[in-house]
Length: 296
Image (tube, rainbow, N blue to C red):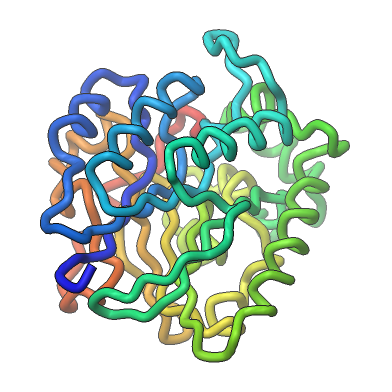
């Protein structure tokens, strides 16, 4: 690990053959001791998720995974028809068989360059609170999204069982994760890893602002400063960029769909430095990667 680096990627979407080829050909360590964070949305079937995680776990010294919404879908094409919490538990057990760290495991500490830092993979979901100012309730926000034909496929495939709805599952996950973070020793310097952004700011560049309600929760808005994060890693938006909030670096590390990454030719690469902190650089205008009208 002494010469290794901590990398991150997300939104591999390997059901697309072009993306599967990217993973197979280009998601490789640069040196011995490299670790990899995968911040969700590998695929829609357990078979594909297992293929990708097994491949990456064989290549990198350690892989840390946080689930995305696509990973949690119960798609008709998947032989595993588990729903909600049961599907998530199944994926956690898969990770354990492969030696991949999941949100249900003890946190691991990166001690290589830029460390030490505790890696905190999370499953937090969303609660429709990232809504536009004119919408006072989730119901109003959902109605506007449906009227604009901007509807996340989660509404049909991401089941909250046994919770009554996704916001209830979100609140339970936030409470559980918040307690674990609060119990970390002072100076832990956590790297907060979630599929969704922890604050509303990254969603302000969405081409279709109605989609923001499926992108996180206001309950985590201060976690990056409250828990003295070394960095925040997320995906989901398919808008790869670096932003800063409260002196903390936020890295959106997604690859995205082929029609999206082909537009910007993966200028940031398929892996993003997390630690040590990369040298400051001028980021391309994020408006070059608008959110697709097709549901995430």
